[in-house]
Image 1 (cartoon, one colour):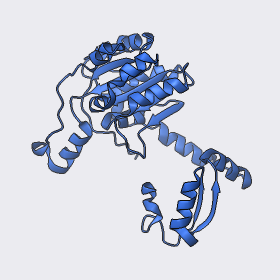
Image 2 (spheres, rainbow, N blue to C red):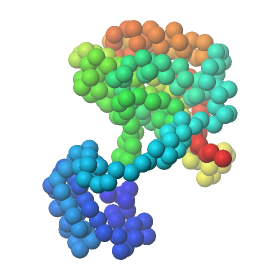
Image 3 (spheres, rainbow, N blue to C red):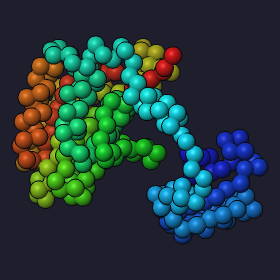
Length: 275
C-alpha cells in the first residue's frame, strides 16, 4: 500500500521478493497482478493467524535482550515532561491532561482508548496506554473519534471508553452525541481545546514563521460541553488544572455520553529522542 510505496524502489529494493498474507482475496489477486515474479508466496490469512503459524513453524530464538530494549524505549519519557505530570493548578499542558486521564484507563483491564485529532492526538498516543486502542493511524482520518467511541461502547458494553480529541476534531461529528444518547452508548470524550487547528498552525509556524500563520484560529473557549448537554449528554468545562479531577469523576459517573471540554496550552506534537 501507500505506506510501503507500493513496493517500489528506492523505498523497497528492486530485487526484493514478496510473501503476501491477507484475509481479502482481492488484495491477494492485486499483489499477484502488480508484483508478478516478485511474489513468491501468498496465502489467505489474517495477521494474527499468519504470525502464529510463522512462529510455530520456525525455530525458537531468544529475543529477551531485544524485548527489554523495546520495552525500555516504550516506557521512556523526556525528563522535561515530569514538571507537568502532577501540576495541581494553572494552565493545562497536554502532559497534565493525559496524566489526569491515566487512572481511568488503568482501573479497567479491558478499557478502550480512542485517540483522534492532530497534535493532541499525538500527545495522547505518546502518554496513554490501554488494552484496546483505536487511533487514526495509517488511514490518517481526523474526526471519527465520537463515532469510534460509540462503536467501542457497542462492542464492549461493560468497558471504560475514553476518547481524546481536539477542538477542531470535535466539529466533525459533534451531532453524533444525539445518536449516542438515543442508543444509550455512554463514553467520555475529552476535548483538548486550544482554540485552533493546531496541527496546521504548527506546520505554518515551521514552514513560514509566526508572521505568516493564517486561517488556523478557532473561537476562543468555545463551549463544546454545552453541545453535548443540549443533545442530552453530560458536559464539563475545565479551565484550570485544579478542576480536572472532579470534572472527570463526574463525567465517568454520569452514565451518559459525556464531553469534558478542557482548555489546554496549544503545544506541538511531542518529539521523543533518547540520548
